[in-house]
Image (cartoon, rainbow, N blue to C red; front, top):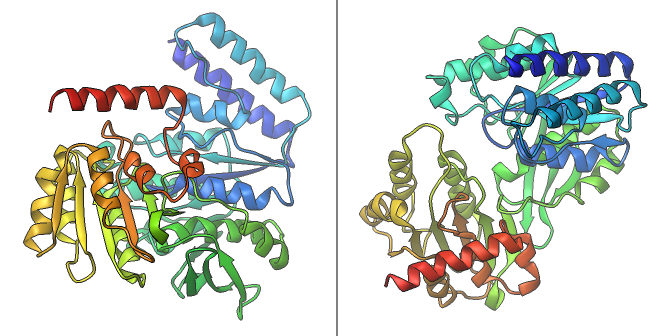
Length: 431
């Protein structure tokens, strides 16, 4: 009952906010995967021309959370406290009265349940909607990818203009689009806003040509990322920037300042002149397979892949880990290293069947020590995992060239480090 009251009040305040501040631009970001990286890239680029508000990079957990993030209000620490909630409602009402401190609000809309996007139709109409992908993640809540696609694209249909990732959205889902006000982006030439990679450097990123309807011949730009999956958020940011009137020269300068998020295909310098690709935050089967393809496309004297657990909302982790193992190519990989029980049971056997050299570990520290002995100048190590209890990011830490890069990894707060120490001590005591 109280939840319904909160939804009604907060919805009213969000509607009132945009009525009182009609010049504020709402950029909605939705999709199966890639939302956090897209938000981060768009915010970095657009902030060079506009005052930008983005609550944080964590996904909203509910409709209430989404409404609070739009208004720039933190979820209460004690969600059961009536006093805390009434304080939030007062803050929300105040937001509608005060002058806005932002010209652009960037907000994630997560497809966490059926009907969630349609519900927002009565609350907001985004100026721009970015659809990052439609993939098999989140299927547990929807039952089929078609229902998921319909849910995600309903937000695009409710927006004044939509920008859809053509590379990661199957063409058959176009039947769910009912608006004519949309465009596409990606690394395929079929996209209207298309980035065509030409060359890659670990130091600077991927250089290529970015062609747009406004400039069909394109212009040369360097995107600070490696691999198709990592390029998509940057291409989305460029497309949003152009849509908001930013000029190519400014976009070229601003895109260089986008830093990869920790654990999301982040390139780091490794020991002995090697290179590390850190993908240890919320890796899914789809992103892991794309990352493997990126690794295969790189020229390097040796390539090693580390497979930990993966993020999955479908209840089929075993099959997906098997799929990842089966895609490990012995002609490309010197070693396949698994960390944790799940990866050992399901990814390792499939990788062996392909003819790979496979080494299994249950402890990330032991895995890191083994891989460090394999490092060589120019060699590349891809580390794939999600934020599970195995702490696979500690493999990356052991392989780094400089300890100053420790802070660029996920889960490095004092509380996290204490939890890891207890975890690894407990493992050691059971040996």
